Length: 116
Image 1 (tube, rainbow, N blue to C red):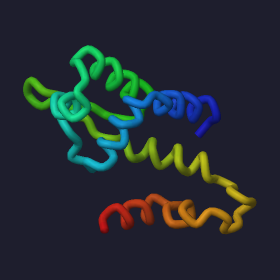
Image 2 (image 1 turned 180 degrees about the vertical axis):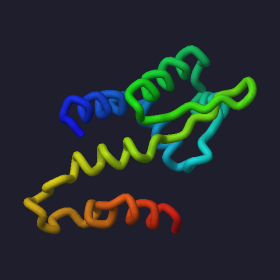
Image 3 (image 1 turned 120 degrees about the horizontal axis):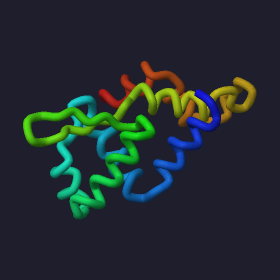
Image 4 (image 1 turned 180 degrees about the horizontal axis):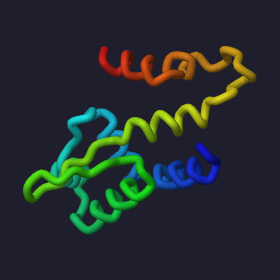
């Protein structure tokens, strides 16, 4: 991942509402959540929610899939994994300085941890 791309992703997550939406979608898993349920959860007006979802989608952090009249959103785990790898690559020159990072330093470990 290039620095500019990482900066765009982090900027998108730098807004409280977008960060909350993204975390909710990460927790929801691959099945995701439809837009109206997200709006209800956070008490957001449809136009505001649409703006935030479009921003997260534009940078590639989430994916929307149409289901009849609704759109179901889910986290883009590959992009999230790339961002986490970018942020933690070469941490402490390869040493084990960050115990929490060590627990989640690979996609397999993160997925195993979230499955428990």
